Image 1 (cartoon, protein in one colour):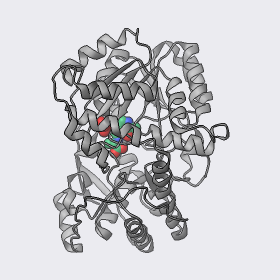
Image 2 (cartoon, protein in one colour):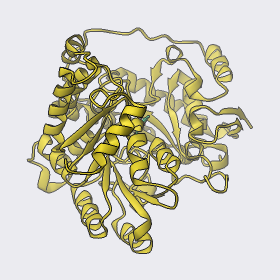
Image 3 (spheres, rainbow, N blue to C red):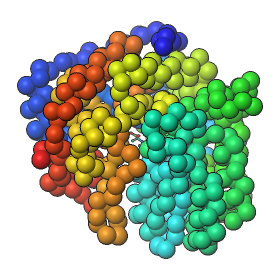
Length: 458
Ligand code: F0G
């Protein structure tokens, strides 16, 4: 697969450091085998996340200087609101400091003990905020998503017949339907417009609000344009508008497709909604006054610019092209991943590479540790290690997948970096049969454990 050239040139660079193998080994021990415990500067290629790790453009940096820091009613706030209303077509836009802040502000207004939230798939912080509000989550992704080798289109979709069955069973208890686009936990897999439309129709029938978890809305729109026949000539901004028209609310981590290092949004389609007052009040308590929501004026200015840059078609072609290029290298090496490639990274099928390691020993985490050992590449587990324990029984849950996620930061790494990643994975594949044991957790917090827990080799 041909590498699509960057539609930009590089103006500012950041040196990388390469530790020796021995140094990396001791860093792993110091971090208690938790890759979140490593220092960024000790990672040669940092694919831990695509969140807040993108490179800002000259336009965004210019915005940083323009930022208006008025406490209330800053010009940068107005600019952000105008841009977001124009892109998404929602009446009310609330800035917040990141995606989980939007979840924290919104979910308690809709969910409480005994309630359920249904989703194509909850991302971990989203799941945590549903649970913190007292409610419970049910994931409802299409079956194809559970088969990494099956190259189906739109593997991020909601399983609509299953959703309908759940609504019939639990109707009154369901407080919210969350459409995560793209579906991060299923491998950055897109959701089709058709699916969004069908979910919206069902939700309307049962009178349940739909919230888009919109972190990677632009990548999702690109996939719709590329793979859903009726949208092939529709410009990305129109696709974005239509996607959002199939929901009532959105929460957005702007640290992904809006290419800022910090920021988030919460949107309400109907300006007359009672929710808006609740959102403003909660925002003032948790985030800051509602015209800044935990962001500096300069952050809002950079975000207003990033929202538009993120939906640029030539940028998106290059961006998804990077995933395809890396996916092609892995195909050549016979390394399985959630296929076809998703929007923000490659999710290597660690269970396929290390079939002899049970989920209770966290194959996704094992491979992530090996990648760091091998080449100083930082990645993360998206599997049973991340999923954690059942909130009611405390028992380890078995995830549908055991992935090691290589999340690609936006506009940061080049073709040669991707080559290094593929080579490292090939090396590990050669010696995979000699990696016989996984890890056990020696300490974990009660929620979102993968960020903090300590591990040791078994
Ligand atoms: N929703 C999705 C789909 C996400 O991927 C994330 C974050 C959030 C919500 C929360 O947003 O981090 O701004 O508070 N995902 C990051 C990741 C952390 O690495 O995938 P946040």
